[in-house]
Image: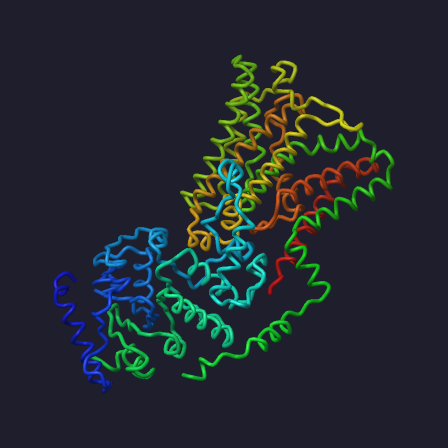
Length: 286
Length: 346
């Protein structure tokens, strides 16, 4: 791995060009936006699990105000990539920059503290707790004065009000009552709670792992709308998904993982779904 | 692609939502019980008090009611600790053994070693905390199931108690007055209460407050509900679990003090089977054995229900075995109701 590392950047560009040539895209060169400053940038991440290479020098850039989709076949390394970005795994090599400053996440809390919020596939909501309690889970606010400081009483009323405001700001109309236990909600509403929690508290980046995987058509549409709302509020989103229509519907750019490497970064305008699948499965390169 | 982005009109969606949300009277009852799990034990308690009161006029006698509260004091205290642990989806089979060990340490250090009563109580607290720390360590660090951990420590603490005490009971008359103070009675409106009963009730108030009003309380529920979700939400699950086992240990030490006052003695053979009685109270009180659901108030009701049944059946002249039989039926009914309630979705 060390040996071929210097050649990596050049290799990436070469591959991108090759793909551009293959798909016959109008743009002479593939999508490389070096004029903007990425909010989150990963450089040549390497992560191995024993003899299995999960990530083989992957780079990724997330720019302000965009939805970046990460797609790839099973075992392509997209989960590992996301886990490295969100502190759930520590990369063996490579660097991660947030706002151009190097960061080293040792656990998910570190990434969260830095402003990277993740909505996991299993949602990470507590079914028995209500919507407001879930939004504030792990960062409860206490009452002012002695009640809060000495008796550590949480500010239930205040948190419920803030929860309402937050849901309203995100345009989530299906959740009127924040005192309902989450287990009484539909799948889409639970997803909305999880996304709202990620988007609240001034986060810089929201990572969504397969947010529509378990949802029906209508609920998926609501979640996609929610993703657009996030972007419109200026929060960049990384979206991991298997669902090509959803990805092409909502993403501004698409990062394609293949065999532990970044195969390409495309846009829904420059490439079709068929192209993306071809790159993903290796039919369009190599 | 564009057909995917078209938004269905929201009014129609809301309407569809309402149609999906079928509510029958039965499902509404279930929803309510689901939200307030202490309702069903409260109904059972009220009904059983009325029935036993009608069956036997001595049942509602103030002296008899006072007796019930005293009979409930120790198991009720242990059940507070048990509730905390069961809320985290754990179970503690060692509560009775820890309480007995603690009570023997309190008695022996003051009577045999002649330490001041306050110091004896402090050492009893240390024993409770130490036992909680051991259980907590084994559950959080070695990742053993709480059932297995406390099955093991149950035997360890029983053996330690007998080794330490030599199997001898310490009588209350030999102890400093402070130790048996929990058995002292005072009169409120014709009903005698013991200090131990009041201490138990205070424990319920304090723990209920903490569970309902503090972040720690919410985290206890979240950890019991789904530990992985809690971890991903940034809760330090092991720390919460450890604190729960430590809190339980401290409560058990208070239980030891109440036990000494109640029986006017510290006996190495008393109360080891209170582990099952405390679980019974928790379960009848509507707390789910799967964790994350329930209240200490339900547990208090559960402990009172068991006390009322045992007392009422014995006043009705039934054999003690039928009391045990009735408690068995109560447990199965309570868990069935819990299962039914948990089926609620959407």
